[in-house]
Amino acid sequence: MIAVDKPSGLLVHRSVLDVHEERFAVQILRDQIGQHVHPVHRLDKGTSGVLLFALDRETAALVSGAFERQAVQKRYLAIVRGHPPEEGVIDHPLTRRFDDAERRTTTPDTPPQDAVTRFRRLATTELPYQVDRYPTSRYALVELAPETGRRHQIRRHLKHISHPIIGDATFGKGRHNRLFTELFGVSRLLLACTSMRLKHPHSGQRLTFATPPAEDFMRVLAALGWSHAPTNLPFDD
Image 1 (cartoon, rainbow, N blue to C red):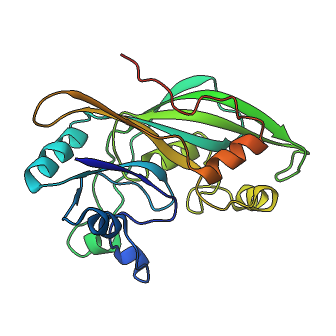
Image 2 (tube, rainbow, N blue to C red):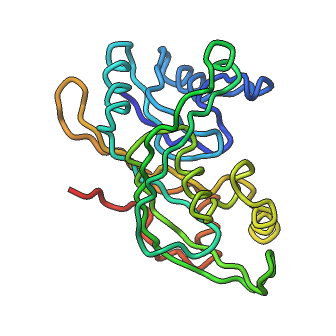
C-alpha cells in the first residue's frame, strides 16, 4: 500500500463530474512511482489529507472490503459555521447519492442508508462581521470520526445539524464562504482527513497514517487564533 497527502482541489481519478480536469491523484502517483496504483476509498475533490492506494488488485480488494465493513478508523478536521455542542453523535440516515455515470445504470429510488458520525468541538471564535441576522458570526473547529462511509457523509451530516463546513459550495452557506475568502484568501472546502487506522490486509499489523492539515488550512487556523489546537488527534483504543 501507499498513502499520500492529497491537496484540496485534486480529483482522485477521472470523473464525468469534471470532464475538463486533466490532473488526478491516481495519475500523479503512478507517474511518481512508475507503476499502476488502485484507490481503495474516496476523498471529495475539495477535501485534503490522507488518501490510501493499493499496489495490486488483491490488496485493493481486501482494503476496500475493510472500508465497506467499517473496519477503518478515520479522523477529520473541519471549520464549521456556528458553535456546535462540545461533543455528540449524528445518527442520521442518508439517501444514496449517485454521480452521472451511475445514474445511467442505477435507479436512485433506494431507501436511506444508516449513517453515523461522532464529533467533538476543539475550538471556537466569534468574528465582528454580520453575515446573517446577527451582528457577529460564530465559527468552530471540530474533529469528526465517521463510523460509516456514505458519500459526502460528513458534509451532509454537518449541514443536517445546521453547522455546515466553511467552503462547501454544495451543502454550505455562500455568504459565510465568501467572508472567509475575503478575510483569509481561502476558498477551499475546510475539511481534512488527518489520520487513518486499519489492519494490514496480509499481516494483520495495525497501521496508522497521519498528516497535519494542509498549509492553507493551517493559515486559517492561525488567523483564527487556533494555532494551539490539536491537529493530529490520537485514536481511541
